[in-house]
Length: 120
Ligand SMILES: [Zn+2]
Image (cartoon, rainbow, N blue to C red; front, side):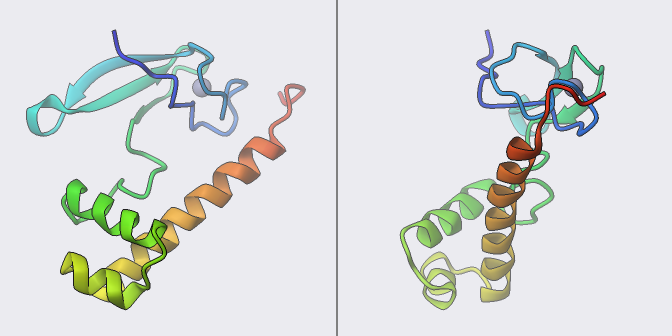
């Protein structure tokens, strides 16, 4: 059984958009290396999306381990240059990733705050 409580529907017109643990999500199929990535489907709006959509790892050319390592360094308070050096990643890439991660967090916050159950 997959634990999907960390995921939420990403369709902004869905009544269950942004709700975590609402049990509206199911795994439709797996893909990618070792079938490690899941395609999720929302029962409420029938939308499908990758579990990585909306995260800073989605559509990122770095291997996931590398991207995670970069974000860990940023989270620990390392600067962009320092992180780039430690992870051997171009600092432009580090900057892009950290911006994406920051944007994701604030977008999610905005969405959750803006969410209204009255919404059509
Ligand atoms: Zn939905």
